[in-house]
Length: 515
Ligand SMILES: CCCCCCCCCCCCCCCC(=O)SCCNC(=O)CCNC(=O)[C@H](O)C(C)(C)COP(=O)(O)OP(=O)(O)OC[C@H]1O[C@@H](n2cnc3c(N)ncnc32)[C@H](O)[C@@H]1OP(=O)(O)O
Ligand SMILES: NC(=O)C1=CN([C@@H]2O[C@H](COP(=O)(O)OP(=O)(O)OC[C@H]3O[C@@H](n4cnc5c(N)ncnc54)[C@H](OP(=O)(O)O)[C@@H]3O)[C@@H](O)[C@H]2O)C=CC1
Image (cartoon, rainbow, N blue to C red; front, side, top):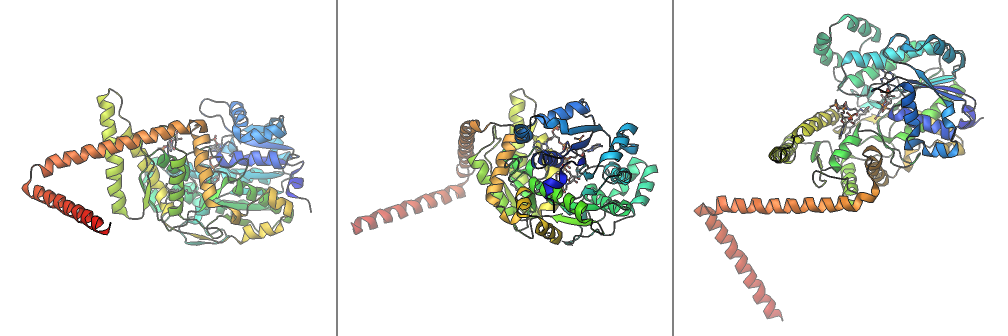
């Protein structure tokens, strides 16, 4: 049987969400490990004043593509951007492009989605569900299509504790919801959203569950695979360790902790931190594409792509390794020395928010005002609290995912494919991974230079001295207020001093006797 890269040789691949975090890694891996692939058609929209082609040019220039560029400087010729806005009817693809896609595509990877937890329901539905529906209709017209791979999330069914590799009944019939929301006013939708999402924490997980159902309903005669990654983090090995380019999920939390801004967060020390490296997810996705096309399973196969059941690591351990990495490799211009703690206790967390977040922010903003600058720290903390508030649901509890299909897929790979498309997370060394992850946020998200680490360490020493000075001043102040003004405090103070004196005299006398 042909190896995975042999199978991709000569194939035309359609990718949605190719400008996103996972999409980019998918494009890079395909070009690097399947160099004979014929063409990658990517659906891209213009954004933030940049045209579609400018965005694709920028993407190809990024560091992520360094290894591909080295192997094949002409790699960009294999990337064919197609203008598309997924929220528009017909995905806003021109009739000529539809013609091209339906006549040549062999495999589709659907990565595009809105992953914002606070997305209004109507928009999340439009992108995560209706766009998926439209893409499936387009796929039905593709004459040479061999597989359709949909990227879902392991948290689509996070209202269950144990999650099997099956498509669960949807919380509501997607078509009925689409029809109802079409005529409803935005304010009414906002009001009924909590009732609709029920025991799911946000519109993201809710619409991703509906999307899985749509994939099942609209699949017709297509060969379908569904990948459900848990919390996707920086790369483990490929194209180089620690690659990450966004603030999503844990990355933003790590950065905020490394900058000394985040001091406390609600999370359970003992809960499994189900992080999965992005290269693992992409290797599994490509292998699943190959398997789906070659073996044509009778029903859509779901792959839970998680680490918790295979090689568990906990939030408490993550906290320890993140802090120790950022102490050794500090971020530039930290606000305070990194010292974040997680706790599952609501009141303790609120106390530390007050003492370690709000109070320093107030002081710093006061300092900024006094020096004629614009106060900004309180605003930053408010945004941070909103973001971590949305993540706490995932860091405070455990889920169990069945991963039989992931194991089954691995057993079908040749020894060579298992190396090239490695998704065996038993080999993952967590402390090393977390260290590379944190360094990756420094290098690739914040674009900080590793050669500036001595200066960053010097800055941390300065912050430590400021803290010591501040604590000393505070102590003297307390002395003045309480000890100097109250007779009882003075008595206690004299009692403590005389006790220390007696202890010292006793210690001196006994050490003279033993000589
Ligand atoms: C040591 C402790 C260990 C414990 C550690 C526990 C970790 C516990 C993780 C659980 C993780 C679950 C993950 C579920 C698994 C999925 O299924 S994955 C899907 C993951 N999705 C996400 O993570 C999306 C979550 N994010 C959101 O929903 C929205 O970004 C938020 C949080 C509501 C914020 O919205 P917003 O205030 O409108 O801000 P947003 O537009 O996103 O960003 C504004 C700007 O701030 C920047 N920014 C965002 N965050 C930051 C930041 N932290 N710092 C600096 N800048 C930032 C952005 O880059 C952006 O810059 P510009 O592009 O404007 O230049
Ligand atoms: N990141 C994670 O931790 C996890 C992600 N997933 C799933 O993986 C997939 C990819 O996620 P990730 O790469 O992190 O997400 P990103 O937000 O990084 O990427 C989303 C992609 O979708 C595209 N997109 C969004 N809206 C539109 C639109 N209206 N028209 C055209 N394209 C659009 C974006 O394009 P543009 O650049 O133009 O905005 C971008 O390419 C998603 O399906 C997500 O649900 C699952 C589990 C965890």
